[in-house]
Length: 84
Ligand SMILES: [Zn+2]
Figure: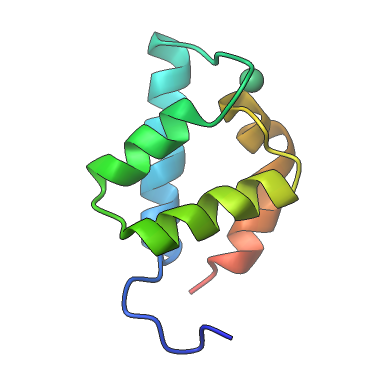
């Protein structure tokens, strides 16, 4: 459905996201409720809103409902989605 999407995150963006999320989880921690840190990182990276929402949906759809669950549940699935 989004075969051509200029704003689409790529593999490199995803690695950058994971590295930054790891830092924030170490320094701030997870609130256990939502994807606050993830959202903050996507904003830092200037990811367009629609792409940001899609990414966060991809996290939740793979069991990442809070920031630490992204690493526990969503990492593999995200790597499959953003693999180029
Ligand atoms: Zn958590």
